[in-house]
Length: 413
Image 1 (cartoon, helix red, strand yellow):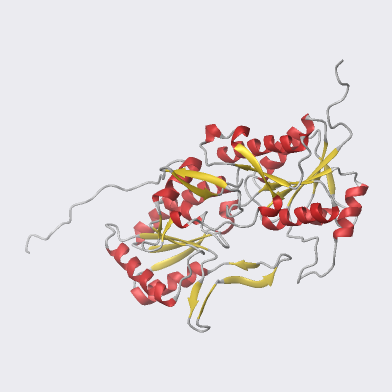
Image 2 (cartoon, rainbow, N blue to C red):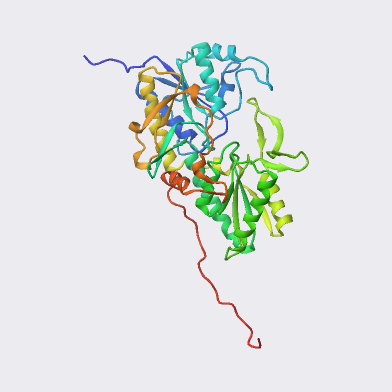
């Protein structure tokens, strides 16, 4: 006899997005919604992250609605609301969360976010027994997914998070476009790229022609800055077009002579509810140092939100679908407190459920750039990193003006 109802008919699954936006969030929401609906769940969307479960709640029904997963960002919107007490907000808002989960009859909660958002979800699972499944998200690509990269027979622990592929391609294109301006004015352009604690995204600028890079993992001490400036001068002077692009992470720790310490440059001293400051401006500090100490014209360019904006690229689209397939597996087995991940770095065609696994949300944490991916002496990314990102966005590509004109010498000389 055929079953009259789908497996999870009468059950409700709710999705929320927290933290910074990425181009892959709507694709993640749509992919999870489609698969959860297929096995019988009614699917709700919680607006503005954890904030949507406070007060009377802010809930949408996504079950039988059209949804554009190619459109970047999140139609559910986002916030950095922390349901647990923090320095900025000492109120424990967990009772409000629990009350609304009961009021809206939510059986399973899927949190799409980074370490903060998924960390709060995991805590609710452990302390209150709320069935949760985490879903990875970050353009910084520093959420530990335990994704292995096989490079020339060596196993390197990499990371692959939805949002990073689209952002990496965007940064590549941004750097490639800047080359024409740098060459036209014989300038050094210091391109600032998002990356609070890790240089994963910054490296994608080298796919667009950035020749040097600085990352948060390597502190720029007074001595190291001197070595860096010498390297910049050498690289600039050896350039046929007297132009150079240097990619720097927003979280680079730069030596401050006034405090005699290395520190980040902040656009604001205000903290969010997870204790994070808003970084920004280190590119201007570096460009100024280059100009004053090397007497070479340098300009700062902050890519800012460009990397996390715009449409979801093809790799991200398929990545979110593949991880959503794994969510179905977790739902069927009622394996909560888990996050689906890709278990190895693969090309687009190999993004399939059999290349996924899941990890305990309590083991997520942050993952810095492996030492195999960055050359500290040359201030650049290595061939191992190039191979890693090539799986995701293809080979480095940028325009080049390859003509070389003969110099005219007056006849009277």
